[in-house]
Image 1 (cartoon, rainbow, N blue to C red):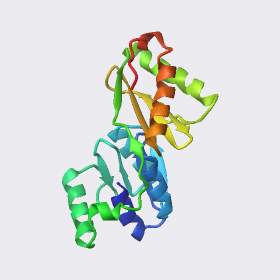
Image 2: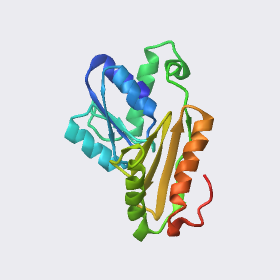
Image 3: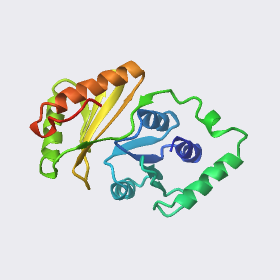
Amino acid sequence: MIIFARDILKRKKGAKVVFEVKCSQNLGNDIKKHGGIPIMWAAGHSLIKDKMLKENAEFGGEMSGHIFFKDGYFGFDDAIYASLRLLLILSNTNQKITEMLSDVPKTFTTPEIRVDCPDEEKFEIVKNITADFKKEYDVIDIDGARVIFNGGWGLIRASNTQPVLVVRFEAETEEKLEDFKKILYQRLNKFPALKSLKPF
């Protein structure tokens, strides 16, 4: 998404880019750095698309691979079109993709960690843990709790489609990543429905 956003922002300074709460902090930072307006939003391709329409955003996407272009296209996700856009960008440079992204800070991340949780309890657990974390940390609560730690973040949200909680982390170092995982695990382990939870 960084490559696409940079390409659009070369031509459209101040353009809005919508991305989901699970995305790397590097994405939002890079959009700002290149003159765009980053808009973090709830996970789900239909929610991202609706937010793009509401904000008149030029571009949006999510971790699952749904990529939406209003810039030069119709605003819906189309994998073939996204592939062609990437090829067009690459045809206009001698750089490899790795070289194009070489200035993006290295971070350590987890994949999505899925924690079994009864449907009837998952939203209440996320609500309670969000309130708990807000006592000590800055929390982005547009979709679950994205807890801002010193040097990274941790996310917990309830899946909209399955009886699971979705957890993800990003940190500047591997040590911090492990620390963030322990902090969230200790909070989650207090809930009776999650007593069988093993450390991440």
